[in-house]
Image 1: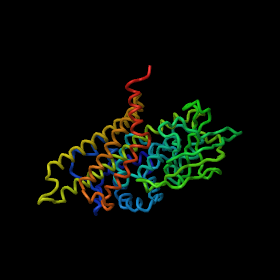
Image 2: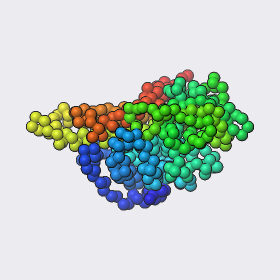
Image 3: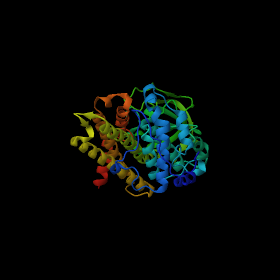
Image 4: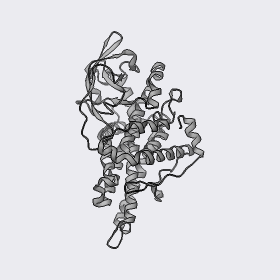
Length: 418
């Protein structure tokens, strides 16, 4: 049971072998060194990766198909992940977190996502919320919320998107009106991961006028049991079926002013700061799913024979694997570089995170799609897990800012306004 950065780092000296999973849906390491996930990692990071690999392959992968089919949100398994320190990866150990850096985090999330990318994706959102509280909360807020979030005794949701404000997030219309020692919230949020199953919601609401745009937004931590807070019907989705997604509805929802995170009017900046890291985490999940699909495709081409020889002997398919390996390496490398930029607080960290998210999630989807094609008709079946990976990574080109918005962020950096 490793619950601190120090304990995780001590594991660096005890390297252990990964269990090789059996069965058609299993995922195992291959000898393809050009697609290596270990390149450039420190001994500590190799230990983190191996621990996450073990957990992903032993606790996530065997159940991923069932969770997807029956729409099971595996809270108990997520709490087991939290017991290893994965519930508060970026939170200060003083409040129960692991206290790791962004580069450590992307290595961990990629490894976990090889087992189940949808479950890992929720875990990244939970970690983003914990980081926001640890970074922008006051001492009382940190002591009140973080210990239970780090153990995942309590779960979190991030609530920014609204029915009429997606990419134009600063135009949100949920209001928070001061009334004595409280704020009264009215409005709704859309596509909220974990909604109806989480305990604490970070809600961006407008305390200023509509014309104030981003400067009129404030962040509130809202308890899920608050009177006036309710949920819409569960969304029927292409993927991410193991985590609930629904609208969050607030009708005269009274929230103590003490639950304001950061300063009034600073909520949009907090939300965007959270998304910088969130984009890297989602990119890592996409690469993790693509890596799993790639590994399965390699084994399939070795085993499957057509026209009297293994498919792997076909040069056209060899070239396809080469392209997939290049995409994986490119996506992984750019995510890790952007994570390093966040760790050193580089002035270009925001556009680098946008670039990494765009490249990695596009690459992840393309590799998963190519892997399905290499499987032929078998890839279309649920038994092999490739079609599930494809469904789960598709949304990553949309959430945490669409890839079109990522291009907008980059263009603004390249061509700054006068």
